[in-house]
Amino acid sequence: MIGPNKREGASQSRARLSDHYQAWLRHHRLSAADSLHRVLDTPLASILTWLVIGIAMALPVGLNVALDNVSRLSTGWDSPAQISLFLVESVDLDGARKLEKELSQREDISEVTLVSRDEALEEFRQLSGFADVLDSLEQNPLPHLLLVTPEQAELPEQAEQLRQSLEEPPQVAQAVLDMAWLQRLNSLMELSRRLVLAIGGLLVFGVILILGNTIRLAIENRRDEIVIVKLVGGSNPFVRRPFLYTGLWYGVGGGACAALLVSLSLWFLQGAVGPLAVLYESEFQLQGLGLMGGLNLLILGGLLGLAGAWVAVTRHLSSIEPR
Amino acid sequence: MIHFDRVSKRYDQGHDALREISVSIDRDELVFLTGHSGAGKSTLLRLIMLMERPSRGQLVVDGKNLASVGRRGIPAHRRDIGVVFQNHQLLFDRTVFDNVALPLVIAGYDHREVGRRVRAALDKVGLLSREQAMPVALSGGEQQRVGIARAVVGKPRILLADEPTGNLDPALSAEIMTLFEDFNQVGVTVLIASHDLALISRLRHRIITLSEGRLVTGGEL
Image (cartoon, each protein chain N blue to C red):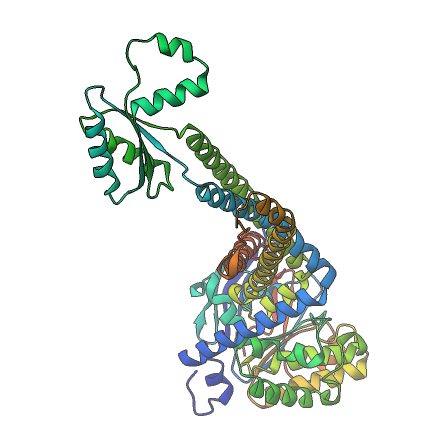
């Protein structure tokens, strides 16, 4: 091959490494622009694809945002957990006052209220309607009671921990935390989260299949072109690239659609939530996706698009060979 | 440049397309390949550009034993060979310019170099003024010349043509053959499959004749 009349073409058909990198970069740019053009050239079909992907993604994401709001709402309620300390009978009023003072100095407790056994009896007498029965008792059966409001008990686990620590002093007979409803709500939320996760997983799978099918059609439409490109020396990665970008554009567009849909429905809901919050004298406001959430949706959409395109491309592209 | 050493090709259905073919084509040669349809002309060309693999025998192209070229090496191998197809194989949704530019885009040339080379190739085949036309707007002869421009734009050392004058009238066919002779003049090894014996026998180049997959004449210099 190496002869005196070695021509220019021979050396130029073997590009150097940096040229290879330049060429690779150039083709990426070209493929990205070309696929974007193709996607935008058929606006109706592309918008439909974007919407399908957007709706599929918006459903789990929207549910998740709703759950976040509910959990924010439930922690925002005042004194979610009040702990009642029933003292041992042998503790007298002074002992109870002393314990009250001690406890109210703890950092994790915001407020301690002492209800003495006499006060409790009086209250009980008035409220229960058992005055006669109570009068016939020889002595007051009620113990002193301390009502403890935790400083912060956003998580039921924290409240439960505090309750356990409050049961330790010998003066305390029993510490009761009324948090059954909190636990119920919490397990309900946990269940919902798992449900959302399952739905999300299914829909992610669905989105990949939808995109895979869309890309498969695009590949079928350009079968002749692929054959020709392979005939004149296009490699598999070269042929694959535009389709991966097509998937990326569909995915990113779908993610944008999903972000838009979630924001729209939140805006729609806010109209109803606002007056309701005012009625409850709460300053609660729906929290949306935020900028990062929106960006994450775009990225997630892009990744799903790439995944779908990859599935289609690996399944269908290598089978197209010049015959 | 191209050496067949007792190459046979048997298709899966048991049809023997080529039997024990030994042919050598030198650098700078222009060789015609002829025979009835089904004689194995196309198979021979397909073996050279690795659209098929030989069942037996050895094939060396441009100093490279093709048995050593793996699947991944096929695209690079094809980029070193210019091919003109009987049915043109043009992209009908792209302009003439883009069609001719395709091999250069694949090879990764920057757009200035692409423009320069594509125009030179189009000028060579006399289609410079039609660079922005779509292939459907061209006649059969013009489409074939676009195919030729695309085959030579990467300056390959080997040019293969499968029935390049298949659907053209005699005057156009002669014109196309003259083009191939011009490329051969500047040092390109040219192998043209054609059954137009009247035309090729006038041109005074070596003629390899195949019949039912066997070499009849023209195997060696």
